[in-house]
Length: 378
Ligand SMILES: [Zn+2]
Image 1 (cartoon, rainbow, N blue to C red):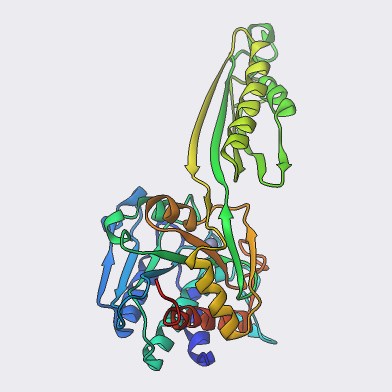
Image 2: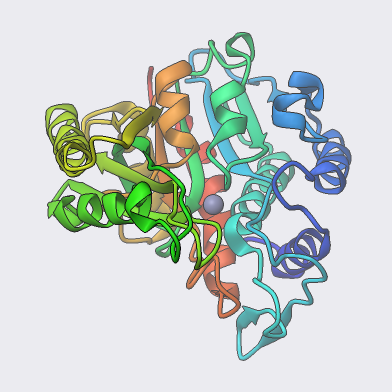
């Protein structure tokens, strides 16, 4: 059904473009041309590329419906890659795309982008009846979901539900829930002093941090709650008692109460540690990175997906995700969205790979979702 050669070419073209977060311009220009060729009624680049100093805004393309009474659905993917994405040379061997080994492959999320374009090609070629379709290609997903966080609501408020193609697992894999996340910085402050001449005048921020870290909950808390202290920086030289140490952490849960609980336990651990350092102090900065989402199995979004999987012969699996994605922000700002597998494996590493079959299946799935619309009343 899908045009394998076309998908290979689109995917290869896309991953070769250097597109780190905030530098998605080349990909955006390429996609604008493609979307136009595919017959988009309107292509908008929002934010004027001004979010966080990036050079590109989100792309939002509207395809008018050609049959009345069908739902207005969205397909989304992100244009940026994690770093180590400069000079990607994709190699297709034994049906698997890989990089040459010195970069990532970029299937996260060009597999999603390619699948959406292929679905639109098929929609056009097959003249199928469909409702209004909104395609959203976001920026800056990898550095904190900033594209979807800042998307202007006026462009998405008439979407009924959507599919974010940005997950592992073959076509048919669907994640209908994702966690809320807090990012938390623990800033331990001490007093600097010469470590050889007058250490007694100093207060070690690193020692304070160490006691806090040791007492802080970490890792998996339960099936839907996790937390982590991920990076640490502090001190200036071996001969100086360190007067600062910063620990960057996060906590996630699909249950808000549990999330608040684990965050307060983390805070408590560091506060207790700081009590032992009367000359020092502790500052805690925490921020909600995004909110949890759940789309029920009875929702039309999942029913349509099921219809598409049945028609294509894919096995539908429904799971909750432990990660954040653009789907979280779409759920908060505009429309319920689920996260959909496109076959990416070992992403964010140089071993990243993607089976051509999984890529083609993802394209087929997009087409089948659009096709299944016509069998679904609103
Ligand atoms: Zn991604």
